[in-house]
Image 1 (cartoon, rainbow, N blue to C red):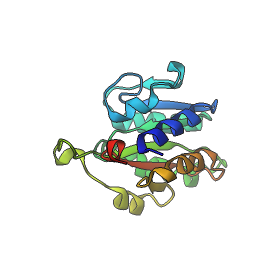
Image 2 (image 1 turned 90 degrees about the vertical axis):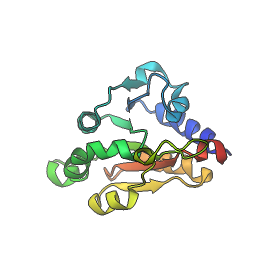
Image 3 (image 1 turned 135 degrees about the vertical axis):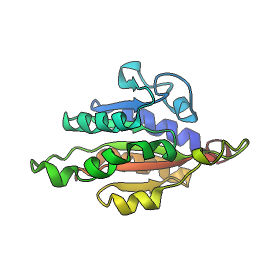
Image 4 (image 1 turned 90 degrees about the horizontal axis):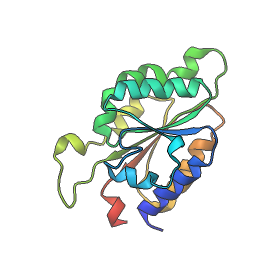
Length: 178
């Protein structure tokens, strides 16, 4: 099992759920390595967004409130930092604030940018997993280091019944190395 193949299989599995919608940058069009994992997903399941990360996270929360399961794609942790207000103050606190028993969740997909064969510079290769875990205790954060765990973790994220959102952290270098 290859890292990329497991990611692609996971995205196709998620797409089978009638409530999922894939949103983010380079979701409908090529542009990142993540785009290639979505090529066989039907166009009506994908919603392309401009570079507006805070808006994207706000839309993610709105979609989960409407009963959808957003798969919100931020190609790098460094980009997800631009949505930190919505992530920390709203998504993480959603079950505490709503008081209405919502059991909806979001799946956030991000990565630690690849450094090989070409280093894209440090604004693209950050790993903020531990910092975000400290700020978001109600969001499950999983680092996808081993290809054999990828499908299992995405399946767990979509099948959660507790309303807890999940951030799945990929490794850009592993797309071609593992």
